[in-house]
Length: 237
Image 1 (cartoon, rainbow, N blue to C red):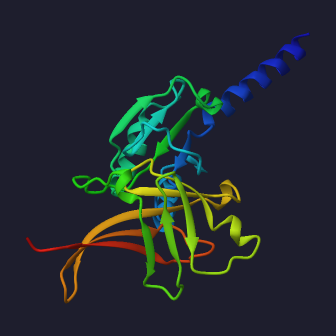
Image 2: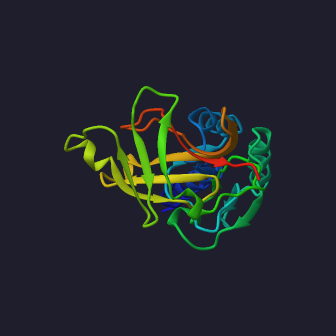
């Protein structure tokens, strides 16, 4: 009987030690970052001793800045500051830190969720209605254009699409977090692509032009690395 109790005690002790030794998991939501930025985040967190789990799921609608959420059951509260400082060192300032008491099941573990959005000048925030235009490709060898419709649909034009590509050539677009839009083709979630909205002023021989560019964060299956631009002339008074 004493031998049985010793075995039980040893088993429990091993489980406790495993639990104490387990690393805090950091779930990284970084779909708005460039690939090089994502890689820098992963390297930094792993260097700090965390288990990193990349995630491309949707951001909560109320997340508009880089945010850190943590489980109330987190074993090492100091890890919250360590993660936030690590992101700040990469230029990804964490604007909001708070516990999450409901939601996905993994929050019951010793976990942190990072929602990362690049820091941008937000003074001239673009409204969704301003994005409804037809954009022509520039700085690439593909003669394609894209129309963002008021109905929330989009469509590429300029090439003859085969049956498979036609599923990528149209779908719906979303403007959730400034300054990014999301293209959701008919083909499915794995084909989602993201573009950064860049506003500027250019000038030709006639007048100045107010430009709106869509810069790809990933290469698009049909449009490659093409940037899309819409321009409005600024006529003198």
